[in-house]
Image (cartoon, rainbow, N blue to C red; front, side, top):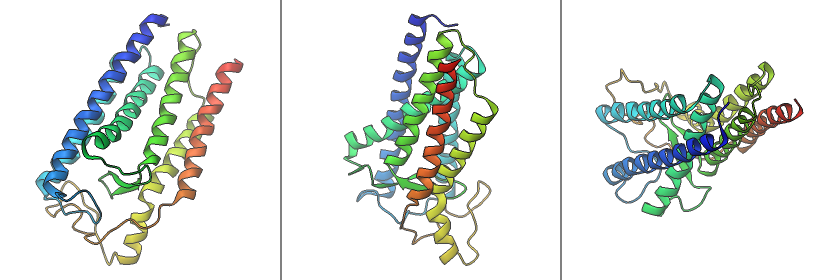
Length: 239
């Protein structure tokens, strides 16, 4: 069990680290937008040369590794390491948008479309959606840490794991749904970009502009995620 003053200190430094990581992520995006979107970010996406696309892919992988590493170093057991990684990821994601707004005045609203990830296809959605998922991660992490601090075995049950995995899957598909719809209508043999390709990233969809976000699918997944976290919290409280 972690002493109370110790866990607060850990959370403080993890928060500070994640905010700094958020600024680092924002600074890279500021440079990329200056290069590829000098008039401001907008769809359709500009084709990115393979060397830059590969560099950007591995930069995103490196970012996740650093956030995972922070959780592993700070946590005292597997469950705590996992939720502290989620905590770092969520703080990083939220402050990424905070700093984008401070530096570029973007997004103009929480419902502005953004590209969330690159591969295997573009993940797109309103800014508010990843922020809601991030807030759910923070709540889940704090519940776990709270009960572990009290000496309880705060681990997910098999059913809770299944619920959370299902919710994550539905949310992720909702981010890719509009692009899948575009491919279905305009694909004509469109291939998916991969690290082994020598073609430009996004060159397969030069006219893609997000049309309709599948809010129904997103909210189904998000409610399932919240339900899984709620069931976990109630079980901890009851036990």
